[in-house]
Image 1 (cartoon, rainbow, N blue to C red):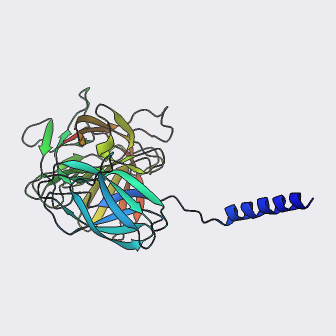
Image 2 (image 1 turned 120 degrees about the vertical axis):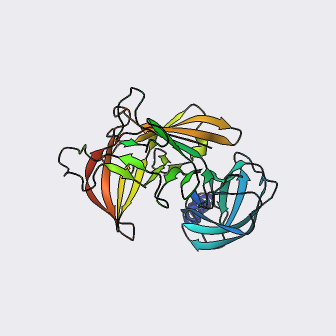
Image 3 (image 1 turned 30 degrees about the horizontal axis):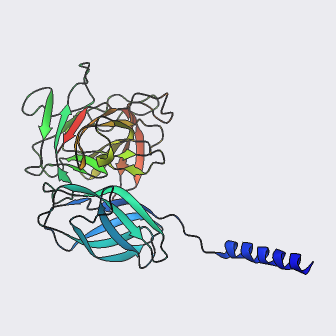
Length: 327
């Protein structure tokens, strides 16, 4: 009888120890800013975002898919908050173009990895993106006119944009973007004259605007998915198309994305790659609502954006487009 009591007590003590044992919340690593740098840069601070970071957390950079730090040296990691740490890094002047995974490890041993969130590239711009040429088309493959089109410079039908004279055309790990806001020569043409039933006429006329066009991709949980990680020839069907339009003192945002209910998704297809990952991308609307129940094809929401980033909905309008980016 005494033996049974002792065994029972030991089992109870063991179960209590299991219940009292500390649990570690899952650390995630979701983004880096800047997301790319040039070889030879020293003591640059990279802000790493995620969840469940703790004081004393350390960041490390490794060549994607390996445990090799490659040409990136981390000299220190500063704790900012549970969702941000700041890593100070330097990159060898002889570094090759490569993508990197980022690992954040807490002092209790819990850790998380973000894949292909960072890149070293000789063509990196001061904005932190890698220089790319973007091509905006005026028609789809069936010759139908598109609602987001080029400025036909230098010839009708399409136009290419490169990072020169105030234009930023680039790719980062979490987005591709064409930013025309810092100059007045080049534009894109945007049409707002196709409202969804129930929406008011757009307060913005159809016309040419020095806008910012951006696309990001998301996984099934709406976490941002690395554009470098899209396999050559494959498509991420849960992406966004966002256009920022400054007009006077008002900034308008015209956006469709999985994270905006009632709007459409974009397809982003990798059309070329090298050993470091995808290097060229094609963007067009996702027209498949059967396999993507949240997708409302070609519908975008139009907002005004306040100085603190808050969005106020104006209405919903159709948007169609065909855009290429390549390094």
